[in-house]
Amino acid sequence: MSAASYKGLQYDRVLLLCVIALLVISVVLVSSASVMEALSRFGDENHYLKRQLIYIVAALIIGIVTVAVPTDIYEKYIIYVLFITFALLLLVLIVGREINQAKRWIDLGFVNLQPAEILKLVWIMFFSSYCSRKIEEVRETRKGFLKAGGFIAFIALLLILQPDFGSLVVVTVVTMSILFAACARLLQYLIMFVGVAFSIAVVAVLAPYRVQRLLTFLDPWSDPFGSGYQLTQSLMAFGRGNLFGEGLGNSIQKLGYLPEAHTDFITSIFGEEFGFAGMCVLIAIEFLIVYKALRLSFSILREGAIFQGFVAYGIGVWLCLQTVINIGVASGGLPTKGLTLPLVSYGGSSLMVTMAGIAVLLRIDFEWRNNIIQKELKRRYREQKENFIG
Image (cartoon, rainbow, N blue to C red; front, side):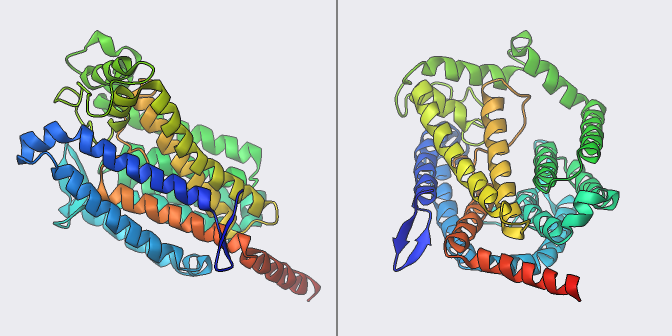
């Protein structure tokens, strides 16, 4: 990984440039994709753009604060943050704002707080802390798996009540990925995987609209003006984009035809205006961040099962999964599911939490480059050796 030096401190300049590039794309895309809806709902074509700029400034402030905090502080206090997050998940069920038959947001006036978004990053950090502290238990006993399963069951209950099936899929996959990175026993891992897959299937079947979404995904053109409307409009946008796109601002689908054009389906508008070539650039930037996260985690985990390595791995899987699902849904490769494209889609909670996750990643990279994590590993090995001798 390339490094840069500023006043003697090492940091990942490429990762930072990728984040800046995505934020610039976000501003351009939101300003283009949201014009018609902003004009029809608020009488101001720049309504969503103005709010997105405020969210970006807030996200940058959160990122600056987050990157300044040593990662051992997160490891020490993350359990308390997790309890606060659980409290917010319960609170949203009581006083939450309902949109499209889902109660996922707490209205704070200036922003709709979505606790499920906060949960993604907080859970990655808590479960990474758990795996680093209980690594032998996770690897060698059933107890470690049962604890993980219990946590997931509780989280699943809170998310299904909203309902927020997309966030549940993200949290579950990230959890299983971290267990995989911790070298858990293959048989227990497979048993848990089958159990999770069965549970997800049951939840999907019990809700008729989820079954309808699956059937629509398989053949959206069977009902192009009903359940398949959103996906068919999205596919039309990609089709119009062709190789190099219609040009910035020239999308037709954003003119009231494609719902959620500036949020979950912003990728479709990007594909229409910038074409296949533009999509390749966007995907490359997103996955360069994922590559940076996973490469950093592998470098750390090779030296030892430590908190920072698992966190970097979890963040990489999280960003990768959301990117794949968002683009997969918009292009018809996956069933419709409301997940934002990291750092690009309109939205306050998602953008701020993602920026905090990137800031944590930058902090881990900084500590690794400047040998802070290596010193922590040596200290732990020394303590383990002393305890074994004692």
